[in-house]
Amino acid sequence: MIIAGLKLTQSGGLALIRDGKLEFNIEVQKLNNNPRYSDIEDLKLLPQLLADQNYSISDIDDWVIDGWDGAKSSSVALRNDGAPVAIEVAPYRESGAISNPSRPGHCGVFEIDHESKRYTSYVHVASHLAAAFSTSPFASRNEPSMVLVWDGGCFPRLYYVDGNGRIEPGGELFPLIGHAYSMASQHFGPFRRAQKSTHVDDFSVAGKMMAYIALGTVRGEVKAVLRELFHKHFEAETDQAKSFRHAIVGCGSTGEPSHQFVHAYLYELHRRMDELGVNDDDVLASIHEFTEDLLLERIALKMRGWKGDGPFNLCFAGGCALNIKWNAALRGHPMIKAMWVPPFPDDSGSAVGTAAMHLGRRDGLRAIDWGVRRGPDLINRPHVPLGWSVSTCTPEEVARLLHRTGKPVIILRGRAELGPRALGARSILAAATSPDMKDLLNRIKHRENYRPVAPICLEEYGPEIFDPGTPDPYMLFEHRVRPDWVQRIPAILHLDGTARLQTVSAADDPVMATILREYHKCSGIPVLCNTSANDHGKGFFPDAVSAMNWGGVDHVWADGVLHQRISGRED
Image 1 (spheres, rainbow, N blue to C red):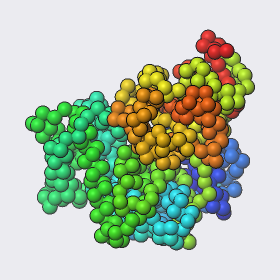
Image 2: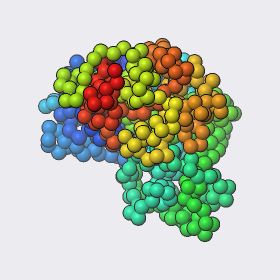
Image 3: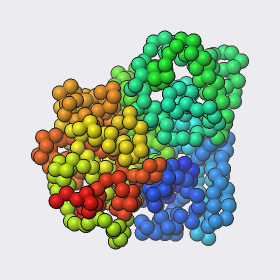
Image 4: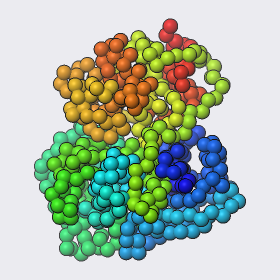
């Protein structure tokens, strides 16, 4: 059985599951230096993507399309070989008509490569739910798990998946869309603006805000006001809150006017903060912690009232699962036995998830055979730009180059990582021993100076250097740098003393483990800086030529070949 999962909208892509194995997930944003979060704009791309992976349209047994914004139905407008088409898909989340996300929300026919193909569509939250559970260690052990889905356009929703993969919806935790977190930056701080959003219009701000809050101090009086206003605007038995709950059900930011209600809440917060004389940095830090407290309080309340005292396994997906601070707080909660966040918790994993949901349509969700490096393969372009030399180079030599020169090296090899984090196949590596390196990497990537740079560390040294330092191969949890290491690796230290750690083992990634091990031998430090190899606002570099033309660094290592800028060459 070959299932093709399609994500047509934001962070569009094509995933193929064959007999329970994820063969690939090709995200449009990782092709041809495309902008991040790119849609599938024309269906004519699909035969090309399949052909690149040695498949054809006729090989596909079942087509599955992810749902999108809407309470009862949804439609995606795009093109088919240049001609405008509209494809009806399932809505954003389950409702009265679609009581369970495992049920198809729409079935139809679409034209692709001059053939009519039947397709099935599941609600959008189903793609996150299945992407999280089906890749989890709990699924592989046939263990039950709670699954929390909190995407930008929906309220946080909790599900229970039993040991047989059957899904039981538990409803919402509280009525606040995920985009509310980044929307706060439109009212406070460096991204404040006069023209407020009517729907999501900047996907990058949430990550910037998560970094920026380290400049502020959490204040109890601000959190008290936040709790008061949250209740007033969203949960109280007042006409104002009732109007919100009648109009907004968490079915996508373009499917309902949710932003106007969130902005009303933030406008009133702004007035109250002006009265108290609280600076913006402290407000944003307090908003973060208030939201984290609310999430932990309500998920514990929901789980205890629904299934008992636990503890429970927990999977977390949706764009909010990219918040490493919330992830770490959830993982440390006494009601959570073990926690899993997939490396593609946002919409970059929706094509995988909708295919996995269809795979389990009869017998329940099951574990799929997957790997994190099943994105597009590195393109080999024979042309080398003028001013660059070419030579073979081993991973050990890359490590020695990093130590000897102190310069960053772009690492491009094999298939790209799935999801938004560069994990060593589309990365820029650099020594972490100087605080100037963080400034350099932020400057060449056109990032704000308060933005952190992540560490990549040999797994066995994680607990020695970081707290807790447990294995985290996908860079999705917060760790604190231990005091003895603060001065040794300042480039990866965030302003609040934390880091977004990625651990590496030889079993999971022998090439990256070799680089780290050799660098450790040279320097005494088993840690390097790791940031994504991409141009500003674009996806990962698809080939070495793109990286050289970008011009941000002097060394590009691609599948065993070192490209050096001749003017900056180190012999």
